Image 1 (cartoon, one colour):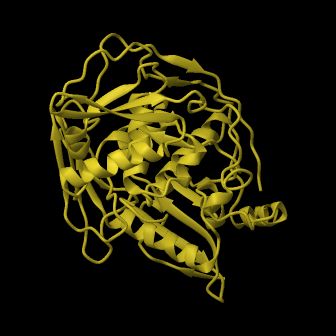
Image 2 (cartoon, one colour):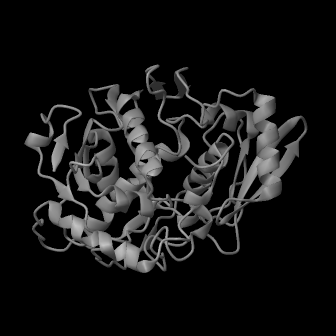
Length: 373
């Protein structure tokens, strides 16, 4: 095998590797990423920066012309990483910002195919995640007011002499990693999220999951405010038209969308569907296998999944310390959302009622428009 080095090993040499070995971690998303404009919603290359500010929260995202800004499809890599970290910690495995894995694991978990083109697209996503720069005041320290980082600090691939990719590794930024190991900052998402093909609808699902949760009356936003929160480059009128079309199609798993009008104001109300997003670790099937045929995995036989288990021997096994089986806390309020302010963040009246959900864990080896990337 040959080892193609893309960056220096400075950080990796200081971190213990977290070797991903779980096969069916339930998908989780990081709360801070779910409602703020951190990613491009378009498949076309974007180099125009995102500049967003509300109250004391500021988000700035910058891209380089060579790669363009990380997209909401690229964010699947971060969702997968968060899912694996939470699952491993629940099982008592030691984790770190330095992840080692087989690309097959990531592609299957996020509903992608596993051909040569998909491996190339994955490497393109990693390049955009590494080259995109973020500055934000979210979760700043007492004396520190702004944090700057990239979504991936560095990454590398392990290849055979014939060029076939056998393994990958990358280092996550501390800002993201701390937001994942803090269980109050992580939410379970529906596996069907990976089947959403539009950039706006993907972003809208994350907003719905973060704000509406399982509240009977859901959550409402003025559409102009949603446009500002999305960071989209399209005009407000075009954004509103796309929101109306999405509301007609009702594609969001676990949620219903309803357009409301208050005088000249147009609002979107997001309501939990009768079959809402499942709790953290209840009845979540392995991603990209049994129920995800619509995203290009119908041809992958179970035997094909098992054959890749041996790739985990590329790296030594990790030690398993004492189990950590803390429950995830859901902080979405169950109180009625009785008022909507066109410049607030959609916060409901009344205190939040955390929901404690036990984890059932298993260890297994093993656009703004357009299609998925």
